[in-house]
Structures are given as structure tokens and as C-alpha cells.
Image 1 (cartoon, rainbow, N blue to C red):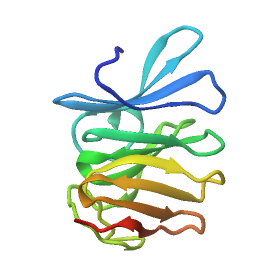
Image 2: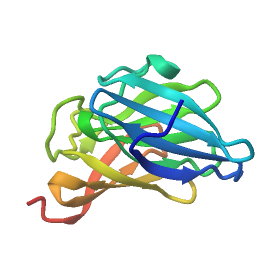
Image 3: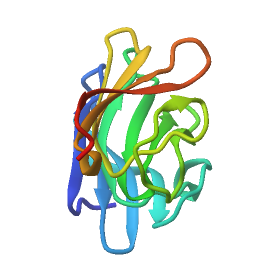
Length: 162
């Protein structure tokens, strides 16, 4: 696997791997580079689409920013083209949709379902991995997603939404 148009590059907390998003005209992937060898591996993704699945059976559309959970066991992903925040568990390579409404853009906050983004572009994780902070590009806002109690709550922190 090569490197083409990398996005959202982050160093794993262990320091031995760099994980990055990659999107082309027809495909989106999450890839990892082992720093000691320079080997590039595809962790998840393939042709454009939306599919929660394991490894290369998962589908993304235009990967934006990524961020590690504080313990390094998972990666949170801005699936910008699908208007979603996704989670990749590194041990199993399982990809799941954490928050957002697939292929439906908007600015809707809420609890668990019906939450909408419009091109989530960048993401950061709180030091205790209980909150995500997301730059929602086309809505011109910073959003906070609470994930600490077994539910998802999205709210707008700043910005006008215009």
C-alpha cells in the first residue's frame, strides 16, 4: 500500500506507528506506517461509501481529521463526505459509526440519534477520552460530543452556524 493525498496524520501514543487518512477520487482509507520499517498497511476502508464493517470491508467518503483515544486502542475519524464521526478499534479493525446521520448534512445537536454534521473536518479527543471536539467545516462551528456515559450528546460550543 502506498501513500496518496494523506490527511489527518497522528502518531500513536506508543510512538511506533503513524496513522493517517487517505482519500482519492474513488476510495478512502485509514492507513498505518510502522516507523521502524516504513511499512504502510491499510487498516480500514476501500471504495467510497458508508459501511460499518471490519478492516477493508468498511467504507468511508473523504476522510478528514483523526484522533486517538487516550489509551491508543481506538481512532476517531472524521468521515467528512458522509457527515459522520466514526470509530476504528485497532485490535479488531472494527469500524462503527459513533455519531451523525449518513449522507445527510445539517446542524442538528441532540442525544444519540438525529445528530447532523456538515463536513466534519478536524477532531480532538479530551485527555480522558470522554469528549470529542469537532470542527464542523461547512457549519462554521466547533462541536462537542460527549461519549462518556454510554450515550452520545452533541452540542455546539462556538460559531454562528453561518
